[in-house]
Image (spheres, rainbow, N blue to C red):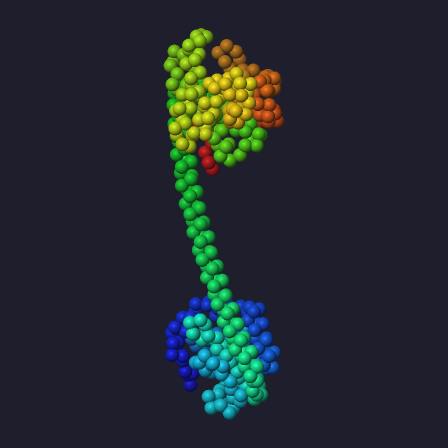
Length: 399
Ligand SMILES: [Fe+2]
């Protein structure tokens, strides 16, 4: 015969479901509650169970080996019908259980006392019960203890549920953060690519105007990066130095041909026009947000550490680090490149000159970092840039 069901069985099952506890592994806290129940009531068996649709499933069991029992034969099916403790002193004397197979056969239940686990919404989720093989009774104190243990079991079920909910929410949030981070990375890569395209376009403009200057820009950029790394520059600052050194002479676009390509010495007035390329470059790229830190290098790349440079006559650390690094890279490239009036000088001569100018034209700290770079690295940089030719690959693309 099927055991009677609580009036609110559909809602009760939904409530049971919401705890996500069915078929979970044993947990110490519920084992402990069952152990205390057995100990206080002096029974061989104590169980913490959850009443599923067709079965009673045991979350904790002391003195009991069965994992679950059919609901129709479970004593606890009757316990979950009310909110009070149910006691069966002798099953053989109780017409509801006298012919129950759990009574007539193994495990031969004679005594049963169970307290329903009532949650805050009033649903009986399951029971905490004690069982014995002899008829017996509970003292008032043991009944109280069973009630308290039931309240405690429900409290732990609620905690467990809240914890599970928080964990799910945290996982959902983490997944959302992961997704947004991925989207941001894609967007950032796109922006970086459009930045590089802008940079390439500017470089190409300079190339068309003055091919030699553009070749020089690519080599200087590669040297600047190497020196900057030796100085300890990282991250965005490295990127800004790279862009700034690449565009340092972009202002030459605004210098008339007659001055830019004049084969003879410039007059005082022409020299001033020529020197204006630093500010023209700054004005040209400074208004492009992502290039404004790089524009500082365009503005200050002709300054000297001792304050005798132009256009502002800055000295020492007043000159941005990128420009102080650039100054060394620029001299290195100028000396080791062919000029209309002389052949390229050996690397050693450039290193000596840079060492000599330390503290005058150059920042001693940058010079020290530069001198720490092995010669073969510098030779390799020059060869690498020249092999890449005009494809502007010295301006790194993000991987
Ligand atoms: Fe310049």
